[in-house]
Length: 95
Image (tube, rainbow, N blue to C red):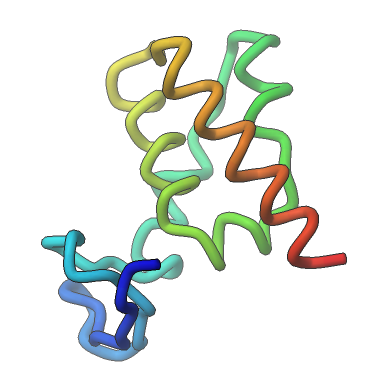
């Protein structure tokens, strides 16, 4: 298990985010919220990204995968599987 610690958001300098030593640039959910709200036209991807907003708030990995899709327009199978696995893990934690 990786060591986690709190760091101020690099953009707004207001919110603390829990990160690991592997993350170079920490952004809070509030700073990424506008980018995450962009429309997704592909029905398969719309279904994939249709998870509770709380999951995106709590997990920066899920936010990063969605932002990657919005920026480049596609995901690899491994990225989709990792997204699904993380979303399932979040469902178990929340319940």
